[in-house]
Length: 127
Image: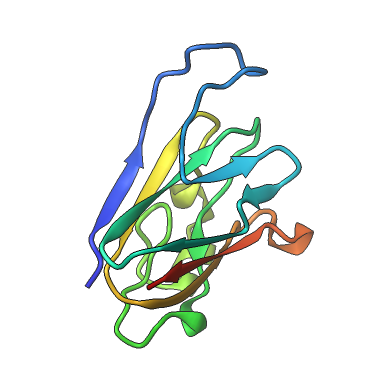
């Protein structure tokens, strides 16, 4: 079972045009995750950092999770439908991060609820 780390707040060192936010996956201007695909080892944590000026979510596609994997979403929802229904709870503001530890091997597809139709989607491959 994965351990989940709640959204953590980080201090911004610069004005909104020059964010100094580090992460494994960035939520970038243009409504996209970068990189769109990341490969990690089982037990690794992935930090999703919002480096844009917009709010985003990190929301797993529930039907596409590996069999043994638990659900993950910024805001702590237990399912994709719960995450969609409680959108405001899962918003990651500019300059914030969300971290997930992936214990089970497999492919994890995720998206940003407000920008899903714009193609803001990504994949974590756990080996």
